[in-house]
Each structure stands twice: as C-alpha cells, then as structure tokens.
Image 1 (cartoon, helix red, strand yellow):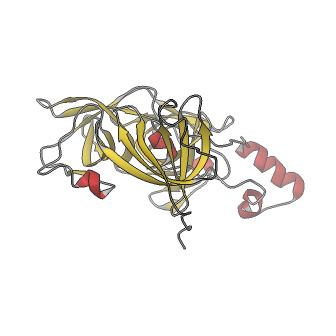
Image 2: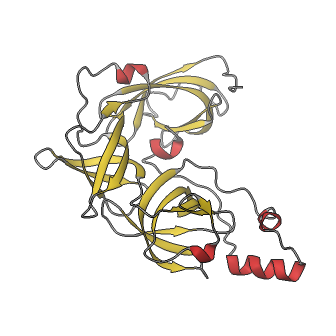
Image 3: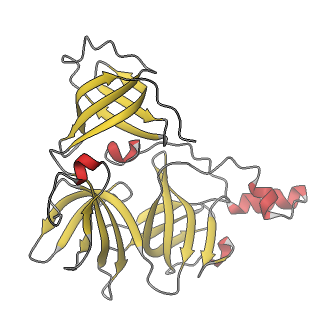
Length: 292
C-alpha cells in the first residue's frame, strides 16, 4: 500500500494545466504538426498510485480541460482534469479529445495531482465499464449485502452491492492474510480494494474485493525514513525495493530516546487502528537495496 492509501488515501503531486486549445495554438504558431512532438514539451504525467473509476461523463468542458464523472455506485459526480498527456480511447482505439462527449460511458484511469483528480487515460466503451476503487468500509448491511465505502477520489461515500458469490479475500503481508481462517467478511473500518461494474439500475455491483487492512491488525514495514516529525509523531517511510511510501504514527513520549534521524533504515511494527497505522516498535536495520 502506498503513502496515499496509508494516509487515508491522499496524495500530492504537481499539476500544470495546459489546455488542448493552447496546444493546438502552439502547434499552429510553431509549425509543429505531430501530436507526439507537442506532448514532448510537457512534463511527465503524475506518478502517483492509479485508480480506475467507471462512470458516465457529465459537464464536459474542453476549454478548461475538465469534466465530471458520475461514478457507478453512487455519490456526487467527481471532477476530473485532463490535458495533452491524457490518452483517450474509444473501444480500444486511440481518439482525439474532440471525440469525448457528455453522456459517454467511460472507464477512467486516475491519480491524485495535488488536490485534483487527473485522468491518465480515458477509455470510452460501448458497454458498461468496470471500475476499481480503494477506500474504507463505513457500513455493511449484511441483510441487503450493500457496503458503504469512503474513497479518496469521491467527496461522498459510494454504495456497492456484493453478490453472495463475490470473492472476498485478505491480501498483502503474510501475517495479515494468515490471521483469519475461513471466508473473509467485511466489517466497518476495513481498508479495501474493490473491482465493480454497473448493474442494470446503475447500482455498483462488486466483482472482487481485496481486504488490505482491518482494525486491530498488525503490519511490519521496512525502509528509509523519508520524513520525521518528533513533535507530532509522524514518520514517513519509503521502501526502496518497490518505492512504496507509508505514513506511520507514533507516541513521541514513548520514542523520544529512540535516536531516529531522517535517512535511517528501520523496521516498524505497526497496528492499524481503523484510521491510521500506529507504530509499536521501531528497530534499526541494514539499508535495503533497491529492487533491480
């Protein structure tokens, strides 16, 4: 799980809005005819954790390079930004921005770009698209088999119907996956990743659910201290083996004599309390080598 998900799925990057209209004007003035040449002057797209959302495009604004996505599963429409770096497809074939239309069904690969949601790619489909989201279970109505989920990319919770045979499994660290015998069940406070599609009535229907963490579960994180605040008790850990980043919290009074420094390599045993990861032990280790 990345820093964004560990910190209740928030992230940060840099967004430089450059409209398609501006790009077209730039091409005309410079004599550049190749889309590839035009895109090459832009910085790389945001590199945060990507999430796929399925929904219907609303309020398309090609001047401001944005639209709202009515996400399958409910909740308020989500504003999504795009620019010349966004790849756009219709039924798998590359198309231009002018081929985007309000009311198109789309599967949108997004990432957080500061406080904005940025579209890495937009796949418009002739049939109802599948979606994928990560979030925290706020409520699970076992009678109706409906989960209410708070996600990082929607200001309002979404609701997913979970059919009886939907695969639900713990994933991630061995000590977490082995800590539960029998079929996994959803509980309020669980961090999950869900794949879903849209039912005939527009209701989000879960296809697969992975439980990433449950309140009270323990995890072990290893890596280098990227940021450290002894006053607030925040330790940001980056694992060089996969570049994953974790936001971990600790009691400053308990660890005031731990002699921690930015850049140190440590192993942290932490408990997920339903909101964040609380460090129980912090142990120095040999520096980890990046994965080749």
